[in-house]
Length: 124
Image 1: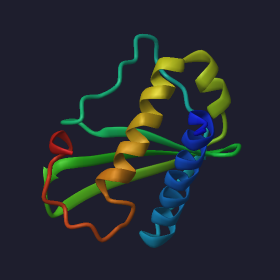
Image 2: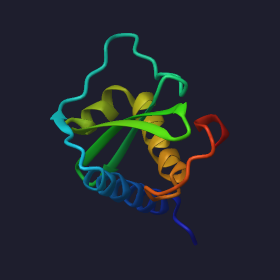
Image 3: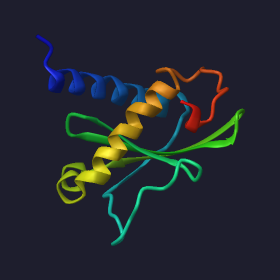
Image 4: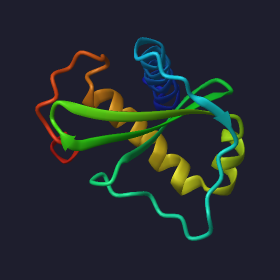
């Protein structure tokens, strides 16, 4: 019998490892910070940027990816978040959407940095 929660945790760990590898591959210098949201915060539209989270154990990487600029150019910002468990407790809907976006982003890049981007985020 397949345990959905175990499978979900395993897939999240795979996506987290990919996100960490992308930081190293692209030689990004993520800031370490606590994440906070202004009252009334809503998730940005994918036309603006994709806001995603990758969680592995007690570590969390948050990415902002601008994917619809042009097929040849992708801009990414990364942060290491120190208070993810607090975000999940205070903003469960936002946290869940960020995790879903993270997994979708991992799939969008097909788990690797060399994917030729020929689709917009909306076509994923």
